[in-house]
Length: 117
Image 1 (cartoon, rainbow, N blue to C red):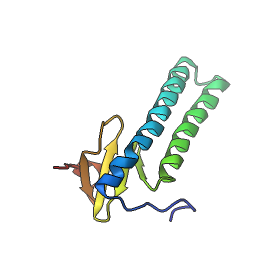
Image 2 (cartoon, rainbow, N blue to C red):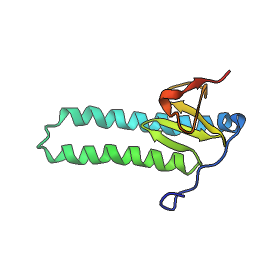
Image 3 (cartoon, rainbow, N blue to C red):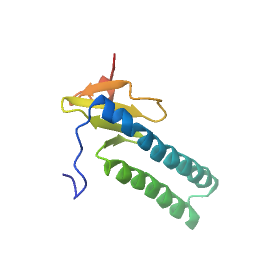
């Protein structure tokens, strides 16, 4: 267990697919929020105090998303990238994919993703 967080769960493909709508909703909302903040951030000069505040707010959105996803037992592997541990490797999903269509073993990572047949 990392830092008192919920340990990753073991998911069948069916369980991962059943949880995916929740993960997608959390992710879509976080993406919308970060896009809005990103637009504002690009409009601000770096020396403007609001720039640092906006950058911190953007990081807070990402951190909140990661915490909420981890609370479901799902592993966060990158920005809008999650893995569902299946006991032998991971079912892998990245926003905005429609479904869980990829798998990789524990050592392969995202670069080693293979299509689920």
